[in-house]
Structure formats: C-alpha cells, structure tokens
Image (cartoon, rainbow, N blue to C red; front, side, top):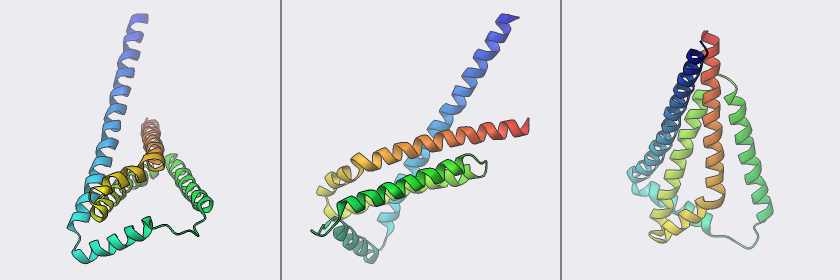
Length: 165
C-alpha cells in the first residue's frame, strides 16, 4: 500500500513538473514571438514613420547637461515597481492571467521594436547601443516580469483546478 502511494506521488510530481515545463516553454516562445513581431512591425513601417522614430531615438540618446539623473532613476524605479505590483495583483485572480500574458507579449514586442529602431538609427553602432540599453536594468526587469508571469500563471492554473474540483 505504501509503495502504491509513493508511486502515485512520484507520478503526480512528474506530471506537475511537465506542466510547468510546458508553461515555461510557452512563456519563452511568447516572448520570442513578441520580439520578432516588434522587429517585423518596425520593418513594415513606411519611411515617414521610420524617420520620425529615428528623430525620437536620436533625441533620446542626446543628453544635455541639465538632466537630473537621480530623478530619472527614481522615476524609472517607481514606474517599474508599480508595474510589478500591478502584475502581482493581477496574478492573484483568474482573469488577470490573460492580462498578464498580454502584457508579457507587449514587453517582448516593445523590446524588439526598440532594438530594431536603435539598430536602424545607428547601424552597427546600434548593436552596441542596444546591448548597453538592455544590459543592466532592462534584463533585470524582464527577468522579474518573467518570474512574476510564470508564478502568476501557475497560481491561476492551480486556482482554476481547485475551483473545478
């Protein structure tokens, strides 16, 4: 009897890990699809739209002496923190998981769009600019968003499973 329960527990554990693995792969695939969609969307823009974006990118990377870097850092931190709190609040509901997955896709889309616009503006120097733009803060933010989306989805799936029982 004890052996049967142990085998059932082992099977259930493998099944849960398999479900989480497929959700993990789904989230990575969704981000890659969003990334490529952002790149394709930039490529399909007409020349007027591309020139307007090039002007915006050039003005973004042109820093003047009167910037208050501490205020910019605090505003960025406040914005990212409020996004994380919003995602956490949406993650404790069943309906919120669809919004979270959509926002996760939009993050991938915006990263793809930004990378392609930087590359278009600065050509090969844009690769270095994109890496410097993404490296410290955006990668950490994307990692936090990925982990939050992953656990919010797992929690929502478990909540649905317990409601159906």
